[in-house]
Image 1 (cartoon, rainbow, N blue to C red):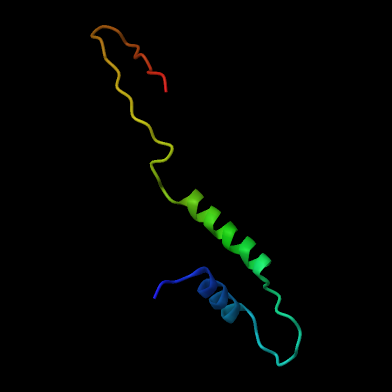
Image 2: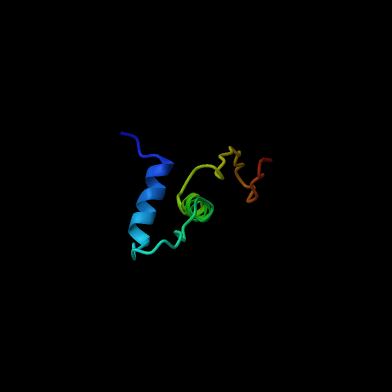
Amino acid sequence: MAYTLDNLRTDIRNYTEVDNGSTTPKVLTDSVLGTIIKNAENRIVRNIDTDQNVFYATSNAIVGNRYVTIPEI
């Protein structure tokens, strides 16, 4: 069974909301949960180490020249 967005929403609600027996609406609407989930996704993307911003370049070193030419991106 695949873990879907609906499963995630249900699990978050089950973990955070307490059933007090009243008919008051749930606090975590789909809109609020969408924002929470999107913020979590953005934080994960910022914190993981990816090669997205890494690039490799080759340069030639010349004997007697202490400067290295930096290739253009």
